Amino acid sequence: MHPRDPHQGHRAATPLELFFDLVFVVAVSTASAQLHHELSAGHVQNGLMSYVFMFFAIWWAWMNFTWFATSFSTDDWLYRVLTFVQMGGVLVLAAGIPGAFHGDFTVTVIAYIVMRVAMIVQWLRASRSAGTARTATLIYAAGIAVVQVFWVAFLFVPAETKPAFFVVFLVFELLVPIIAETRSQGRTPWHPHHITERYSLFTLIVLGESLLASSNAIIEALDEVESLGPLISIAVLTLVVTASLWWIYFWPPHHRAITTFARSLRYGYTHFFVFAAAAAFSSGIEVEIDRLTGHSELDAVQASFTVTVPIAVFLLGIWWIAIRDNADRVVNTVIPIAALLVLLDPLLPTPVVFTAIVLVAVVVLLVVRPPVAQEAARSQS
Image (cartoon, rainbow, N blue to C red; front, side, top):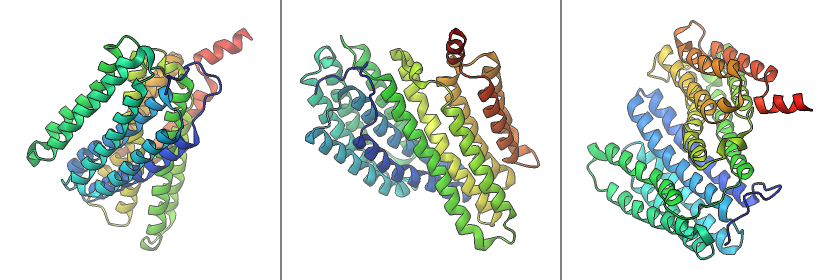
């Protein structure tokens, strides 16, 4: 398991990596569905806190495998088996998410540890032929192992202190890659085009989840509304908003965002907010439909915020990590303002409609003002 060449030409996601991503569809769908139920029931604080906890477990397991694969993937039988073990852990994690939203973390912690133990084995195997990155691989393995002991202890702490302990252990998890990459003689290699393609594919998954969840919610509500007009409006707006978010995400050249270790950390860690917001957007659409059918405890303004807050977080997140360094002053001014306008949308008489108009306007701006580097290349040619 030698380090992969970070400059390898035509490196693309493998069928195993795509299969790995598909399993996460189940976990993301379950987490967003539970968030929807909690929000509609008026349990906003518990819903948001539980969603953040569960989505962190999903995202962190996915991200750790993704960065390992860009550095050491071999696609031999043992690598595949260990990957399948992690996939099994994801499915068990998904099964435990409903219980975790009600305070029972036993299944999710066990599933998470299964995934992480498989990752430890991968790092130990890589250490045997990692060259200058050997120390880094060993620190990864040791660091992950130590944190898993903390997660076992997490099951036994009092319920009222669990949130505080979760945040502390979350920080420990985030520190492992930083320590491993900065305290060793050689760093693990990453392939810029490959890693950003992997993030792009996961973005497609969470955006697709928004379309699927909202479509299912609309189908279920067809027999519960007197007029189809509001449902048709929500369906159209959901497609317009999702398509706009897709357009905005894929506007900048992402591979330029991870040219250094610090920038790769910013790109990788900030994507938690991008992914979580995209998945939460579907929950907001479902809450809006619940409000139309009389199944939500939230009022119109509160329900609208469940849609617009994720959109604003998505916009600011992708602007910060990928758009900002590739855009001119106009684009870098408009996108933060657009996020602010989206947040104000629920206070207007026509919520979500205004958000869709704002996002379409942003897309039009991006069409007429291409990335700075791309524009410079056109001028030189």
